[in-house]
Length: 364
Image 1: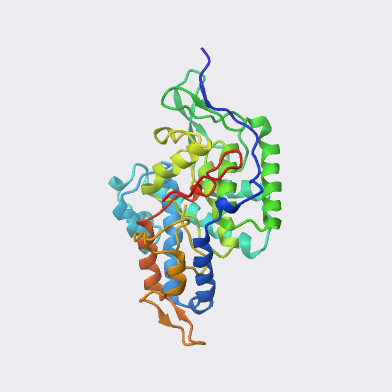
Image 2: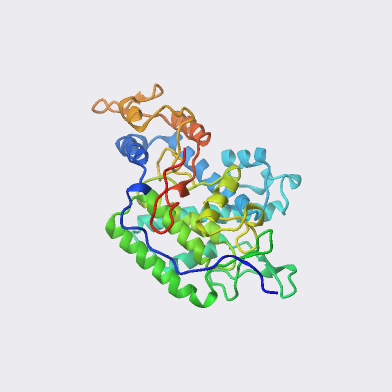
């Protein structure tokens, strides 16, 4: 008896012509505040350290999200603060060899640096770069989970920097199958993805919209045997970094919401099934090379605050930059704000949550 299909693959689609319902004006004001303060903060040592901690968080959480490894919260925080070192990882704090876990996290760190180098060199996004990125992210990952012809779970060697040669369609709890792009169409779909992305850059599509679109369409294709979620978050981060925004961080606490958003859009399985061909799946937060962190599409816990209020009233923890009377946030204040925004995080993918070109109201 043939398996039921919960989602049937179809070629990727472009953004709708009218992006009005997908753009968040709140991000415009936050971006402007950052641009105004960036120069005065770039040479602050505390801010550089803060950015390093954010990069480590990205590197750790992207693997936890995909269940590539587990890691206790306390050890996670220790690694974020002190650096990635297997000596800081007790054997009982993870489900894998601490040396291997540290090596995988360092690969993820290297991928973030690779993104910044890409932007600095002003390169154009290409399939060869995406394959390089995948090979870097999976450098210390020897195998991935697969289903054999008898329906049994098994470990198989992972193809690094190479498109899949067999289907990687996950099964849902009810036995139905979620279809990704068939292997024979991957190359042409990836070419189309990058062609549309280039057109969007010429159209000056807002970063939050382009990041969501690129992430979602890439996961629809699911071009690699494994690691697609990590690559998708890298691509979204690349869009933000080019806009001088912040890397896209999705933590383990946001995992279910993240996967449900992708599932609603037709690119991810149910949360409990999100593993094997991508082990976890896709999704959002932020920084720039010298930036303060603003989770993409976030609100402060006080829902009564508005973008207009934030434009008119600078926070109490600001200080004078001593130049033309400008006021900037000190690094410690930026860190406090980054932590505060986590309490009110909304999914980036609500921005791309449309079908047939219709954007829904932004969820509160």
